[in-house]
Image (cartoon, rainbow, N blue to C red):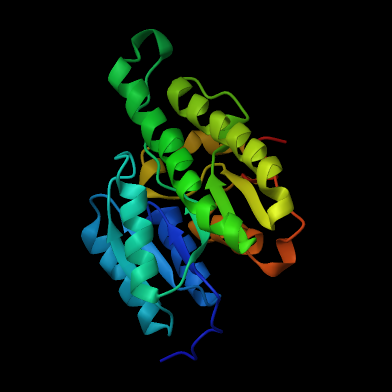
Length: 248
């Protein structure tokens, strides 16, 4: 077994962490010493595998089922995580997201609502829940996983772009509201990252990426790890692109 990482004064919650970017973030935060709540909606086996990997490497984690679009779920996730580790949640990573691509004239109300509810409204509710104890503790880190699509148009994704752009503006506004209380709120905007969600995207699109390659979930996780670290205490309201230069 690997040497246990240093203890942290609080726990971390990562939504949508059963695979891909969320799983990489959960593993990375655990390696930095954070006890991690691995939230999932339907990927029970994947979340269990992430928890097992973290524990194998000497970290602490718990799988937390819950659909983040359900208004009652934020309280449930926080209460279970805080009770399990007997620690306050000091890190929240809003990573859960879905896409339902379609050209705007054909986009349905359901496709619009599903993407906005998961990618933006859920992040608002979780952030609101996280801020209550963070404000009392005068400490906390919130990282919202946006997208390069929130900065750069991509036809067929108007719902996804609206949600991710809204998440960026939400991030900046909340960061200003809580900056005096020792809380930082930042966004990470990945570009083309190799995950299940991008598996069917045409490889020809890589020609638009100046780096000429896709990123990895670990590339995104490294940025999140920095933003929640002590070294990033003066970084708030920022949008860190992880896109190989796509939005430059």
